Image (cartoon, rainbow, N blue to C red):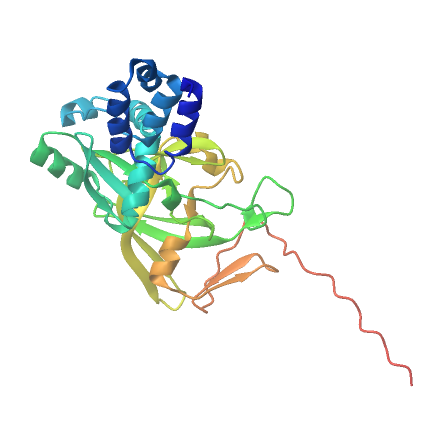
Length: 319
């Protein structure tokens, strides 16, 4: 039997074999007859072993001081490099743990969660550093950041006759409060707001431990830092819908993909907040208005004239 035939037979029977078993086979081959020993050194066999070997995490945790010396842009670049180098490792961990986020210390999963509600924020990241001496790497499962944005709806977009439904909301923290009208998109799993807009209104300031996640929308990368803010909808009758939640604050908002469709957008409000508050929201496509909880509170789009459907006259009956 030639080496080529033996190699083909080996490859055909190894699809189900794990990396440890392949290493054992390799050892046996190397200890066999000299004419067959070189099979284990063939690129085809080595490639098969590599495919079967579980990926390892590549990256060394920084100290808190080292991380804080980086600019926001540099923090984003660090995150992008880590995600690219560890793509297979992250995929395997997210799939195995069914995780929404991971905390990585010394190339191992230190902590993880199944929803974004308990995602570690700045204070928790600093606590992890004091506990371990390493500033954590944090990764969010891309499946939990998806935005299935459409172009068929209200706030006027760049396309003629196209509008995005809007919601008037109040965001607040211990240091500030701001009212805004955001674009409402049920295709977005999370809520995204202009970082600089919120900072200018004193809702927060950058703090040690902020971790800037890198994600993609409309085929463009953007950075976002989660902040815990109070989100509130209020009806005209005074009925409040409010709770504390994570908002993704996006630096360089005006250069981000969030303004491609609506250049005047300051916030994209996703379904996560409405699913938590459970208000009744009526979208009136004829008037381009949003009615909250059956009240008369309306969030008007920028279009002043209503788009009305032309009525067809009812034909008269013959007598």
